[in-house]
View (cartoon, rainbow, N blue to C red):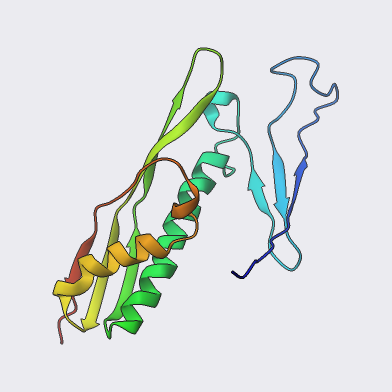
Length: 157
């Protein structure tokens, strides 16, 4: 088994002058940094007094699942001789909270819409299934990651 290590820094930048003296006295703003990469501007969701212009952890989790599935799909499609010309995903997720303030993401649905120009469109559903099996992030979560794919075959002009 190969091991791959990843490192990043999360820095809270939301001290508005009095730290966390009150629930509404501080911003949830933070930045995520990794060497050689652009910063990610983060916050919490608006429901938790966050800044909607910044990415929240739940969105980043959904994005990681969507991104991982896409990269796995492109890999298995290429290996199967399916030429993907366009890929987009309208992903969504559900967060359920409890009265004690805890909660969890309970499901994510990926809606990949792809366009292919070569290869057998009939194998595409199996390729999505295989991509799901290979996705590192999907293999790391304890909730269902559902798929609702749509495939379009490119037409010649």
